[in-house]
Amino acid sequence: MDTRLRGYAILLGNALGHRLYNNASGRDRPSPNMNQKRIFPVIALLLANSLAATLVLPILPLVAVSQFGASVFQALLLETCYYGAKLIAAPILGRSSDRRGRRPILLLSQTGTVIAFTLFVVAHPAGRTLPPILGLNSGLLILYAARLLDGVTAGSSTVAKAYVADVVPENGRSQVLGWMSATLGIGFIFGPITGGLLSAQFGLLAPFVAASTLTFAALVGSTLILQESLQPRTAAHKQATTTAKLSLPHIFQQTIFVRITAMGFLATLCFSAISAIFVLYINAIFFTDAADLSAASRFAGLAFTLIGITLAVTQIFLIKPLVKKYGETAVVQFSQISMVATFAAIPFVTNRTLFLLLAIPFVFVYGLLEPNLQAIVSRTDDNIRGQLFGLYQSTLSGADLLGPVWVALAFESISPQSVWWLSAVLMFLGFAISLTFRGRSRLSPSR
Image (cartoon, rainbow, N blue to C red):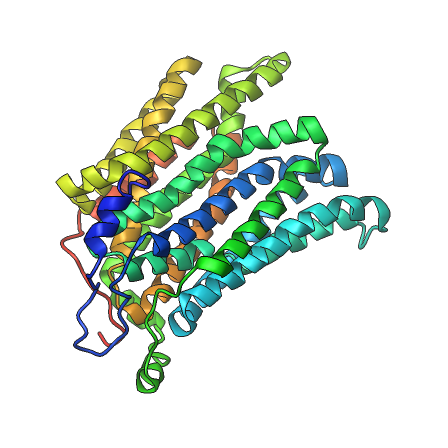
């Protein structure tokens, strides 16, 4: 998706007075005064959204089935709605941030997130009081609308990455992008536990109210303290850059971007598939007795907590020293080949404790991979950076859509273990692509 807290002072001090790119072409450059106030609001925004999401999204399909009478297929369509909308909207939001600035698009995206989480709250009473529409519970339809809206305005992560690339020098981007990715790990540590406590104490609606409140507080805070990362443009420069739209042929000419995106797609195809099937795999392999369902649930909860801790520690404390010593490309290749080895080994594991121990290094190396891929994508001209991050995020959303599909087919049609072997093949393809990657490249609309 890099060290978040400990490296703040070093990163921010090194960044003062520096600019990201030469100004020979007259394009915009980020403000040289990068300080904690520039980055903290963005990370706080992503952390709030991650906590809100992990409060409610793990139980959302269960709510759809138990409260609104949805089938399992209808419940899974909630995520399909989100990723399908995000697939289309992310490039548009990215380009809009290049033209109109990062701050307004971030605030627009967060407004959509607030409304979506508020609709989650509204869905509960609506499902009980309003009549069905087209044979579907009204509350379920509101959930669909909420996920679609959240997907359409899901520009927070995409534009936030472009924001960081605007204000952070190249040698510090992996670190800060890792901080941003670690918000997901922190969310997994605290979100599900907090959601469970709130549900037990105040009822099923409580986590949804808490999530809505949290996203609204993040919107208010961002409105008050978030600064624009791009310097004001001259009229002549605006005229020039508004026409700098990337065409499909031009995108494929940028071989670095295409290869990095392919690597990110393959990694996400694996990670989204494994995330979707993780609990089912645990239940099928280690808890074959139906009476062990509660034990399987507890074991899965422990696994997710350890995964969250591992992801957060990796991306907060380890990425910066590793990238500094070995470079981004070497760290990416190490992550890929390590995942290949881990995926190939897991099908032979029949002990649940050993399985848990193998899951930790898998999350560790995945935590190294994504922020470094994003750091390489960030080496672009200011006026197309948002577009490329949008395209990159859109491609990953496509992988998020396809991952649960292929893994379900493999799980049922071949065997549960086949999921890991196929994932190993996909990751090896990504590793093979990385071997063709040499040096650094800057993308330009004129190239």
